Image (cartoon, rainbow, N blue to C red; front, top):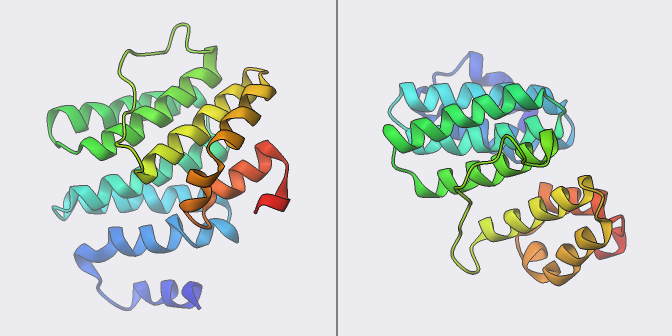
Length: 189
C-alpha cells in the first residue's frame, strides 16, 4: 500500500512535505523490500529537498538514515567519510542541530573504524546522547558493529547482551535487524 502511495508523488504536489514523505517511506518501511541503495538515494534527495524548502531539521533526519543505509549498503567508505564530514561542517557552521550532529558523529566513528581502525581517520568529537534517549541504543549497536569488525566478537556480544532491554525498547527497527545479524540469536527478536 505504501508503495502505491509513493507512486502518486508524481501527480500530487507535496511541496515542503517531501522530506517527511521520503523519511517515512524510505527510512522506515522501504528498506525491508526495496534495494537499500535506492532508499539511500531517495533519502539524500529528501535532505536536499529539506534544505531547499527551509526544513533543515527534516532534511538532516533524512540524511542520517541515508548515511546509515550507505554504511550497510556497502558504499565506498572514504567517499562516505568525506560526505559525513561535509554534513558535520554544515551542522557546525550553518545549522545548529545537536541531535543530528551526535548521530553523524556516531556513524562517522563506525566508518572511521571500518576504514583503518580509526588510526588516521578518527576525530576527537564523539556522540553523546542523554540517558534513555533512543540515540543511546544506536551508539551501543554501532559499538557492537565496530567490535565485530575489529575481530572482538566477545565484546560485540557483551555490548548487545548488556544493553538488550534498551535496544529492544526502540521497537521493531533496523537496529534489531542489525543486532540479529551481528549477534546471530533471532530468538531474542
